[in-house]
Length: 185
Image (cartoon, rainbow, N blue to C red; front, side, top):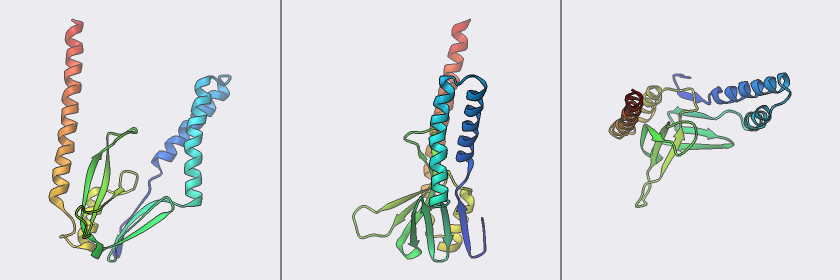
């Protein structure tokens, strides 16, 4: 959501809706087929995810990222954090490797804070679960925080690294597929 005085990206409902559809499918499967073990496990699994999301939305509301003239405000679960532009050294919008879960990469807003310590402190704000595009977030950072705050070189080098990994995975899949075809003949 873009306004003239701020940019707001709210949490997407995609994952909770998928969990709700899977829960409904498993309930239907259980009712129509005398409750097989797969339906019971599916209802338990997706029921837990759905109930956690329902609790989260009613108790804490939706997560968001707001960029305005004062700084960057983000909310994750019940914690709302405000970062002033004077505290921020640089920002990058990039892709990170996922350590687990159902995705290979996820989008983050990497904020490096100004500090006197030897190692600068970084804050990672996930963008993958929010209604936003990388270009919109970059434009908002440059508009409200100045072009010096956004580090385009680091973002581009990180994105090239991710593209090389994806290309290597694609080549590996093609080689495995070609090998399986050649061994069948």
